[in-house]
Image 1: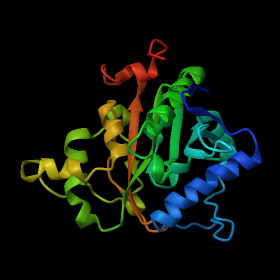
Image 2: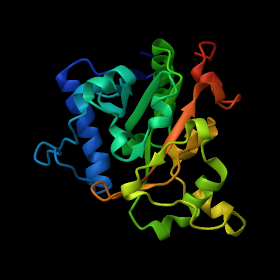
Image 3: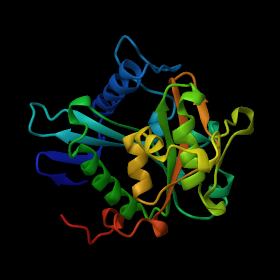
Image 4: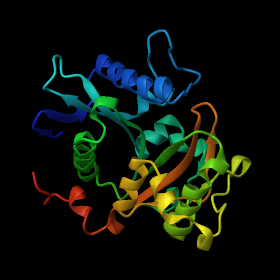
Length: 255
């Protein structure tokens, strides 16, 4: 993948590199956010699940530190990999029929996180440049995946959820929908009653970054009690990317 300044982005190559990714995920999703799961190894400090063997795992390594530790990760699942896994990870939460029947090349994004010491810096930018290369290499047309708000109190999240529903709902050809068994409406506050400034402030930075690129959200949220989060499904169509930001996903972007 890409090597820029002190950082390198590439796919995990060995079991030890995968464990390093799972260790970072544990620090973020379990230690920081209070998540858990059937396969989480608390003794070893590893956040993992049954899907890990099927995903590609993109790593961000910091070569300015001894042993070039993994300081950022992304989990990537193409359509052919999902067939081997039996499903996309997010299909437990969202009905992806509209995407599956589109005939387009799909990529599911997940478990994106950055070490606490690297947030607010260039780490996410480098991860996204590595993702851009991956998208181009595999001819990806539509990217999607769940992104999370911390906590499961929907009323506390009513402003940002409603804002996403009213302002960024996916068009019908991309509009996945939360599974009916646990569909959580997002239009909790009428559009004309929203505190737009507060709603935007309450949206996590990663979700805002996807929206700036021209991303959309699916219909309905999913309450993930195991991970102590409220999830939304984000969808990005490479043909609809925001023109000002699409250079991240073009071969002509600056090095």
